[in-house]
Image 1 (spheres, rainbow, N blue to C red):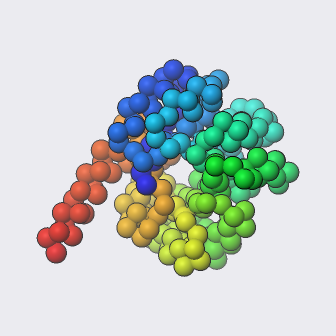
Image 2: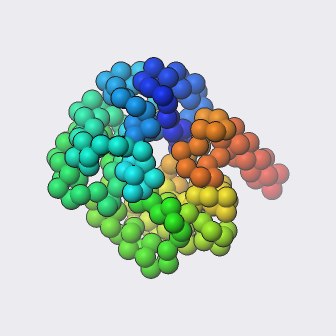
Length: 229
């Protein structure tokens, strides 16, 4: 699934961007940590495409300025309003995560459990442990993202995809940064559940993110190559 993240100066602008992204994506990610005074009721009422609500912590590259309790409370509100997915970090406070899990129980909203490292790409063993940590939350999708200093770093992250799929766990895993761009192309070929692309240049939600036009052009070229044999 291709997901376009939405950040904006306010709710009205975010709704406009959602409308622009609608014909281009399978999912839209509302980065409410980057939408000041986001009105979740209006935003979710405006969707015509499934929506992930993300309120990313500053420790993992987000922009939310309030307390952790306030941050997770907005995710709980998104569940109450019927968001399709909410994204919570594996490192979030266990008590606050428990509140979110209670809100999710028996409802339609699905969980994405994520872990990000903006400083580099750890060892394969460390990444395996993070995969297990995320899977322990029983999410619909695990998301593991690191920063690549070299293209070879991508291999350690990408190999999490077949490992997770062997266990029956949907996963999205790739690397950020210039050296990580190749992983964003390879991830969907390996079975990544969600692939993130920005609506336009200058709107990337993470370093190295392709635009939706770039992503679709690459997918088209690869498909044409397959047809030619």
